[in-house]
Image (tube, rainbow, N blue to C red; front, side, top):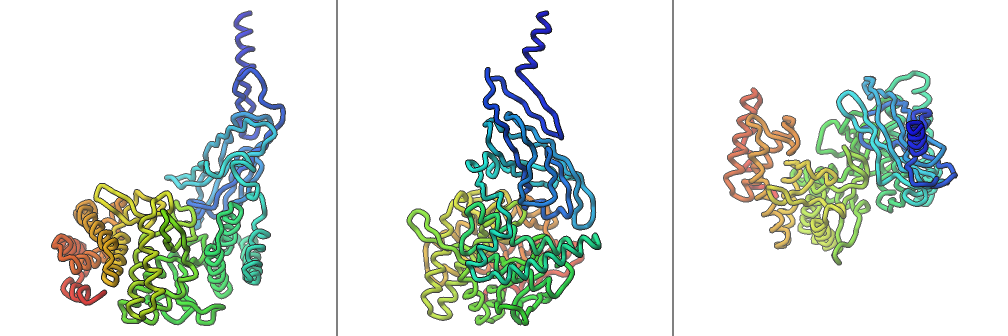
Length: 517
């Protein structure tokens, strides 16, 4: 009798209901917290590995997810600790199939409330794993805004109507409809990728607007990105290749750039292609092009790019000091948007200072100073400067502070050096000197014994970046006279010969470095 009573007590304390992959655990507290049902929605965020997923079908609880950034009802019933089983399948853009799996838990203990669980897909060996995004999960209307349930198109339509660019949204819709139809008729993943490229900027703009994180610079950026992506798919019916670049002009420092001289706008700014994200204005590429033109002696093109970047500069204040940043509005690796690159910040500071030297226009010097001020921002405020075991380091990707990129750090130093040469600013000089010392201390760890590392977390780099490392070390030697940089440049040049590759002409490069800015 006592044994049966104990069983009944335990049964009354823990009630488990398993229906459609949903497990509800009621925590004993002496009373039912509420007799009202809860509703739990699930949304797959369009970030990270979602860009590697072509068509997918994922069951989470009672919800079937086939789209990103759209909440779907996964559970309706009694409150408690809700466990949602997740499983499904996807293909990548090469047609290779993967399983999708995961387990989601949410404490939906407030009866009568609606909850949202936002998840993201992480690509692990052989499988995509779903993980919860805590900052976008919780009680709807309290922890997450109700606006997340609005349809994307009407949200973007309102934004673009206010911006006077509604016609571009309509063109984008026509193209999306065309490629979605072709995907349905043929099953060709290239058409689905085109549809995803064309949808990306609308979906991302809509999400930022719903979250209250969209500003004027973001709107301008996404409109330009949409123009570039729409232009491409109105003339080509195949997706681009990673790092393909499009420019609405007749100039480029590189072969292979698509020169859209008949495009709807005139601009020297480069738009870079990334799969499932279309063409994007990338400040890093823009300042790199401006720098390349400067080294080529095309100061006119350098100034044009710097002028055309002005509308995409964002201003803020930190500790009573105004700063300028070039926000990046497309997702890259595990980034949220917008994110900041130290590469763009440093080169912008240097190039705008040099533009002042070239023209005498004081507005260039003003904005250069504001870019320098951005070096004071902490990571928590979208900063990009960190302290490491080597000393100060300038992050190329500020959302990934463990990834110390060698070329991005040294190129940031180039920008600081240019700024200091023009202004004599001691703050810039100190940032440069500290950064140089950090690179010097880090070089042994960036040397594998037969090659150089692209970043601290990688074991190697491409031949392109290995050669770039040699050139950048020669630049540091030319500007500082520190023999360490020459020694490593020569050592890494030797690694090329060991692989049967043509060596860099160090003597010639040094002469160029001494004569360059």
